[in-house]
Amino acid sequence: MGYQQFMSVGTDKDLITTLKRVAAVLKQAGIPFALAGGFAAYARGGTSSDHDVDFLLREQDVDKALHALSEVGFRTVRPPEDWLVKVYDEDLMVDLIFRPVDKPVTDETLADTDPISVSAILMPVISATVLMEHKLLTFGQHYCDFAKALPLARSLREQIDWRRVRKATEESPYAQAFLVLLQKLDVIHEGDTT
Image 1 (cartoon, rainbow, N blue to C red):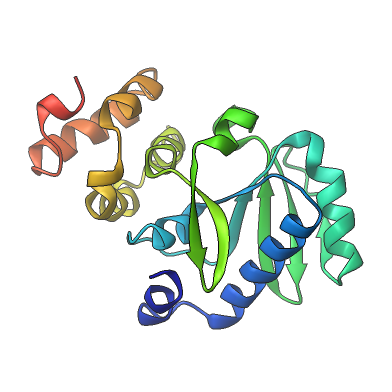
Image 2: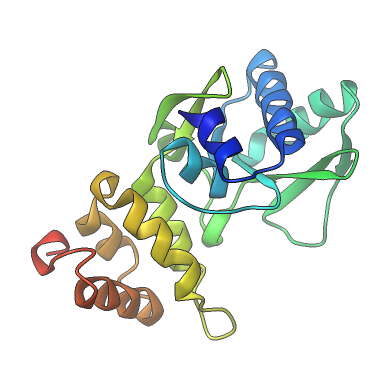
């Protein structure tokens, strides 16, 4: 499912090769991780687009991951943001995120995954529920693009625990507004979230 679907939507095969290389290095180094972001959505059969690869890992594993990846030729960068580091395979970027949406990646976060074959490499992929939670918790006063979240919600709706999403995002008026929009569009039903 994963690779064929990536290729059918025109995703750069070089980026998929980079995704596979990073996952293989992390697995070989014994670093717990999970595929996240747009590629996780694709791996789950959903629709989303991305220009980079996102992996979640615990903050305590960042230095080990950077060392392992630099040993095989990746360029590593510690940007000013204090929630991720970046590695580059030439000009292809991979984000190693240890604090998405202001919450640290924990063992529980990494356990909320499914092993999915992505282009012939079995790797943990973050749950559709966590994908949706993260997407909705990025919405705020300066960024609130429902048009990017709507295809994700539609394509993965059967895999998402909507009650859990509502609870996890209840402090965000933007997330709550999006859930109302999903009900009005018949993507979810009122009973799905209560």
